[in-house]
Image 1 (cartoon, helix red, strand yellow):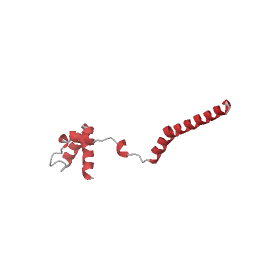
Image 2 (cartoon, helix red, strand yellow):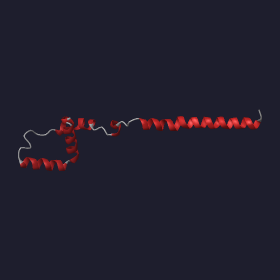
Image 3 (spheres, one colour):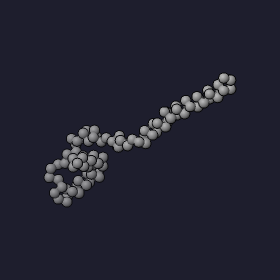
Image 4 (cartoon, helix red, strand yellow):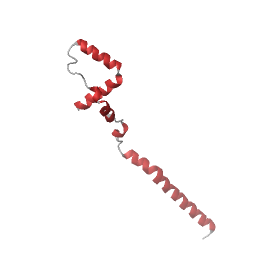
Length: 97
């Protein structure tokens, strides 16, 4: 076999190895990502720990909400502290499920 023929075979083998490496390292993970459904639970933040920490201070006094004066007072309190209000609403929605 001549040196030129050996050089052609080596180039062919090198090109084949490069194509296989690209397929394994690049194409295969991309195809796997496309086939899998995304895990939505990993994309959404976990508010469970936040609810557990603030659960003690999110209790509604009994008897509130009977008349319009109490309702307006609750609305003012909700506007004064929007973070606590949002946590409380999320907790109520979680309980309704």
